[in-house]
Image (cartoon, rainbow, N blue to C red):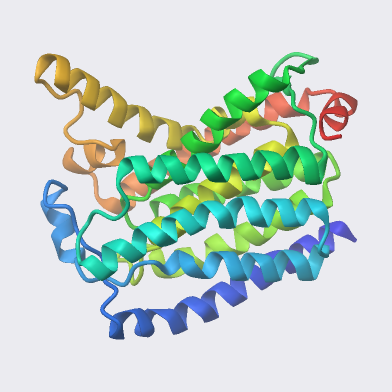
Length: 331
């Protein structure tokens, strides 16, 4: 029954996203809510200026409907929807400032981080309080649990903030974040099926449907961009699923492309400040490949293949975990 309801969640997510996005595109166009392009980015992207953005605004309401209708309003489903939506709200504020001020810069870096830390506090309070998750980690590859509340919360600050920002950096080519995240969502669905987590199944299935529906409009050449509203929502969704399935320490492997994108920016900045030389043609990493001669679609396929391999490796690790240990950590 849970599997059937998950398929229904996927179908609802897909159908509602297609309908909502199709109606949203002309509205955003009339309101002149078009993408502002960074001058220092690839010159080929300048033609994308004016493409409707903030399409990720459909994610939260569609996910809430699809998940609550198929899985009910319970502490697990509420936690997952809130985790993604609260981070998406930061992106919504960022997009709003960009659009109303007609510039490529929205919230300042310190403002984003400050808001993220507030949301992290709320998410941890919900996870540990509302859901009853244990403040501890499963150590991937070992039948061990590390239960240190202070250490857990400190690491989760890095995990939550890092995942949302890395997802945001990945959203730089048509369909790149929606396409790679689709593969990751499939991985979390399989994990949820293995460990019989109905809420995880419904949420990840609905996320698959939403990403499929949005990808239809977001693939190259994109008719709409998700904006920070969508990328922060997706990052929050992946972090929430990792918390529920107790795969927090495995998240860097599951979301390997996110990590590579973020690392490319960090390495580029540090090396350039120290030596004045660039390691990559341009960062984030997808621009390096793009400037190397690959078309946007080729970069997308390459990154989706890399994501598929990393998710498969993560699934092999998770499959060897002790279900009783993970259940104990879930409270």
